[in-house]
Length: 307
Image 1 (tube, one colour):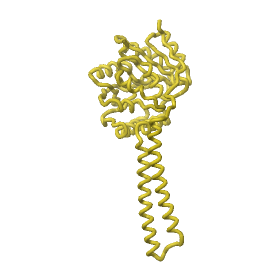
Image 2: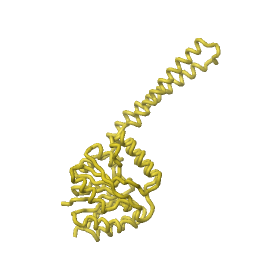
Image 3: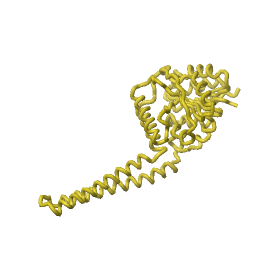
């Protein structure tokens, strides 16, 4: 039985993979493990490096996706293959130290379903820190994340939770959101955040916005409800102004001919249209959350050295 599966999405990280494999092997030398590397259609030679590593280390499973699906989708591909009793999710750039895996694993074995790594100081761009903070605040409302918990990409999860996570087949998965929809038995421990080993980070502003939209739209219809409330509010204001302008029309002599009726019609119809769009969006959102069948990922190759 494999005790720990390390699931790592890979994108344009050919220069990091050999060192990553070396450190993982050293960190997990006393435990039965596997490393699942998912190539998310990298533009460099990452897949060639992964293929070579599988020939050298029988504990490595290589997955090659047919197109770029995004980080969470690539992770879901790896989770569907992982066989360990505990699954580690981490990045491919060595900002997450493989030597911290055992710390997270031992904390999880105390009875927790999930253990997140908490970085007291993050060695990354300021806008990423701001984005992480904003994402955390929104998560407190949408997925009921505790305020003290940091949604780290570095975590250890029990197989029982993963078995439930992979039941989700929607096209836009958000792994942390799925975790919080399954369990509240979650903890975290402090670990060090390191500089990227080689190359430049691939997680740009556009990808950050994509993650935020997955969080906002995949697990809640709150944005649509906000639209409904705005529509209702504008409609209410429109009716109030309509009564005000009618009052002016009836009791004031300083009125431009036709202006009152035009404004009243615009205000009432505009408010009703926004309200109707919000309500329609509410129903469409619920339908979307349940019926969208776009594939999460498509796998081109899976390689493993069985010798």
